[in-house]
Image (cartoon, rainbow, N blue to C red):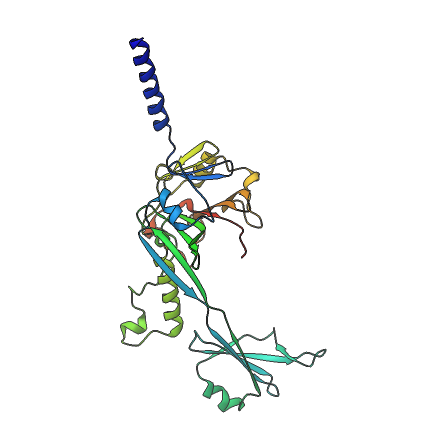
Length: 312
């Protein structure tokens, strides 16, 4: 009897060890469930619950946008209007025509905009405007919880700390996009002149984007329907190997209204969708991209976004 008990215990230990060995690491999408390191996670769950599976985040980034003022000035007899955005240090002068049906001023689509840097310059030429319209954009606040070392983050609803979506960074933003982080001075700055407001606005926007991204890339596993890829092994030059490894290279995963060559979309439900975005610098150079000679050849999964169709 003792021998049987020993054998039974040994078999149980072997089964337990086998289960532990077969535990899937990284992100796992199985049926309509999402896991990380074998612990279930979900969009819409509280961030506090989310950290039980993911571990504690490294930092929180609060981003605000909107809240700007847009003014439109009209000179009805001179057939012009001037547009001024509060974030710009210039005005757009727009040629107008009178709509024959309504009698209202509308843009003359045959004319291009003229950039002007002071209202005095405009009024000295056209006189005082006849009317003014002012619009304000609503202020939007976004909250990001960031795991720098692991390479992913989540966007949360600020009031409730509910997980809105999960962003997995598989290619760092500095490898595919030229960012102005203020580290390199413009020509004006080199000569002691302040940069334009347009440059400062772009720099502020680039810094905000950079700060809400993880500092490192995710190089772990992603499993879908029992098929696993390792992002580190795939590397940065084989997009096709990545999507084939997951079995998402056929038309069932075509993104709507987009080129199938540039992303793949797993549709599970309104509460669970996954987009695999592609980046390649093997074709024509885009002015907003980093130079190929600086970052090398790239053709890979740029990021993985796990999201839902929530509209409230």
